[in-house]
Length: 368
Ligand code: SF4
Ligand code: SF4
Image (cartoon, rainbow, N blue to C red):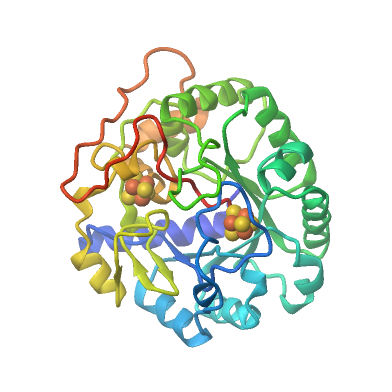
């Protein structure tokens, strides 16, 4: 794991406090989406097809700070859209740092070179740069040539200036374990702190629907990656049990309240990925009024194939707390890469679910 000890201790102490207070549904990472506008149009993006009046909306500095304070999560991830487009982003980042929260500014890096001096290196600030693979793969994923090169240049610049930098990688159809392993080797050579890696979620709104990987294939892919990884020193920014889940060794229930989302519509129910389930006016209302039991890849057809960290990382962390020995063994020896996998989840029919065509995934993960 690449996360610095200081941050791990902050998160561990936050988790202990939630346990002592008996809080059942607590947030780990606030997903703060202050705008949906982006300067790219990736094939697997579910965030950018809104009409201009929505894409032109921004959460103000005050709204962002209110969301951070209301939620109380120790980490804040700022995806988008492209957050560097937001004129008040440096102030928003400063405000979050002043609250001693760890902020991950997720960017495709096209504007990073131009805007980097608006930010100061801090142990609380990490640039999380969107890279879905090596040059050919990434440029195809973001539907524009030359983006990989610019992102790598920006990563080197940010590292050179003393910023914490991670890579945020989303996997789509057509990947193989060797290719992903080569990419992870390259990421480590770049010197980033770690890589966040997850299968794309099939967004209904994504421009292309044939780019998403089915859950069983995801597990096979991750087993292949981890098999190669046994002799490597990759730093993946996930709990060991989430990686074990990706490899088909854990049957987890989704706990989307672990990564609540505040965007230009309000607090999005139930998670960052499902956009049409309604919004709450406050974090408390989100927690109190969302029908959480209706969601998860074993519950809802809209969640079919979802293995995203915003749904299952918090579940894995909770499992680590309950079963530390299991978590430690997976940390030491890596996820199991052979033998039977846990059964595939079968979503129950929902009264409110819209019918879908069999075999067609419903939606995808935003790459950043
Ligand atoms: S996936 Fe990220 S970089 Fe690509 S269009 Fe969507 S918000 Fe922009
Ligand atoms: S399974 Fe995925 S899409 Fe469904 S609620 Fe959980 S995180 Fe959201």
